[in-house]
Amino acid sequence: MSNNHTSLSIVIPVYMAENIVNELVKRITQAVNSITENYEIILVDDGSLDKSWKKIQENCNFDKKVKGIKLNKNYGQHNALLCGIRQAKYDLIVTLDDDLQNPPEEIPKLLEKLDEGFDVVYGYPKNEQHGLFRNIASLFTKMALKTTMGISIARHVSAFRVFRTTLRDSFSDYKGSFISIDVLLSWGTNSFSAFPVNHDQRVEGKSNYTVRKLINHALNMITGFSVLPLQIASLMGFVLAIFGLLVLIYVVGRFLLQGSPVPGFPFIASIIAIFSGAQLLAIGIIGEYLARIHFRTMDKPQYFIRQQTNKSSPN
Image (cartoon, rainbow, N blue to C red; front, side):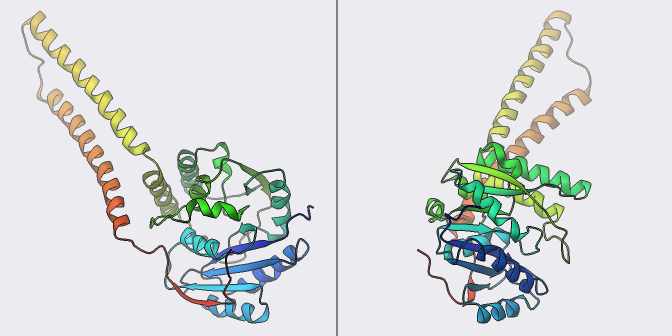
């Protein structure tokens, strides 16, 4: 394992994990102590309703390397991550989930891969099992990531990642209310890689990423960070215009050659329905983009910090 990593900031969004926090901090500390003495563990409580914040405070009191941030409400995983990333003060940032499915003991492997000259390295699971609908939703999300990030390894994107803190400067002024850390990282570099790591069983509870949330996340990425839907609407309009022209040629040609119009109300009704549906779809897509522009002008906060413990001082 490389010893070139002089400083690490480990950022973990925490939500309803009161029974896991102690073990999480213990295992991270053991894993990172073998790499460097210069590290910090930033735990961001994303509006938990249980005693997660109390557990975070206890760990902060015991170890000054542990920093605690409590958000005023549940803003979402990526918002909590962004909050922690902005507080990080060391050269490299490691992120992972709070459920210990991402084993902290695998962090050295990601750092070794980063040493090969990459700016971002993901640890993707060797064997991860989900239900059919969850797998379909995950595939949809990966496709959205590939579209918005424009990188070939998008299918391996995961919450277990390490990246250079300097990349933070590329999205320091971002004020949008919807956040995708991975898309924001792609604004600063094309140097991505991924490495297979172990993926443990969840200690307790269930994933907060339901099928519905995954699909919403994918849709938000596509409409928030790309113009693909508008391009699809434009292409659909072009195809339907060609189709309408061909129908017109058919109707006029039939009338000129046979002297009779095309019979049947259903035919005309179906043509109208096709064009009306396409128009409504295009209007809906444009409306989605206009709504996002409106929300950005409102300056809705990405998060609001209620309390901090052992406050970090970012560079």
